[in-house]
Image 1: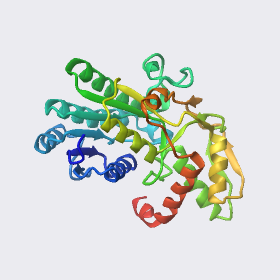
Image 2 (image 1 turned 135 degrees about the horizontal axis):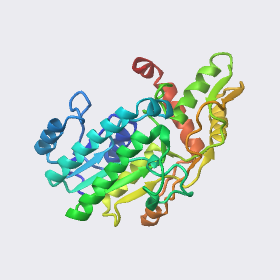
Image 3 (image 1 turned 45 degrees about the vertical axis):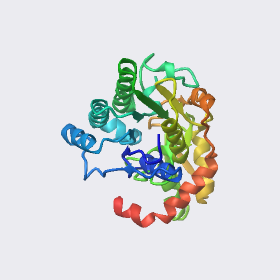
Image 4 (image 1 turned 135 degrees about the vertical axis):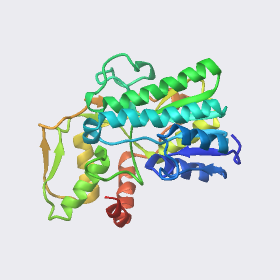
Length: 315
């Protein structure tokens, strides 16, 4: 990929898309294009096809998705399945029809079976049942992985899928009704600290284990994929290490300065017991995560504090 190549980043205003935009800009790419959801509705097939046909990008990075935590996923399975399939199907078909040279599809570690052996290898896909609370989102992402695999096999096109673990970082969603566990905890502990170190109520019993990847590390993995022709169609992207939700809570409590108690509500779902990715395939090719969890949480919290006013307007 040349530095002047036209590259379309779908979802460029989101946490992942904006991180990819920053990483590519820092690497010297000068012809990046993006459209807001108001300018281009990716769920609309005609609009997407017209846009890709007119722009003729050399590469498309699909960082656009309808996302959320356990609560949002479990309550809106229909929307998470339908809208994510609409977005990715429209982009993949438009890319294929217009002979786009490279397509990078971003999925999620939730595509793997709930009780699969750990760490999760790419070939565990579709070997058992999914986690019920985010089944809609997972099925949508699985269909995207398969579309890219089939196009790659049938038409010898460089379509690659990256499956990141739990992401966090600048521009994350801190809305408590829709956010993932890490940003939700950051906000809860921060607000509790400012409320005389009130008790923080957290879902589950804290025993599930999770792996967390800073979004800037994912962006570097996307850049690596953009600049290399990878031999296989799907790769896990993560740190290869995990922590319990209790350990995560303790770390965030320390970073935010909260000194109150934590109340675990075991009547609420834990989700998948463990989700650790086997990242050896991408590591062997030359990419590796570099941001330590505590460092990443601290910089994310700093960003959160600096953007309080903007976040209040959003929520």
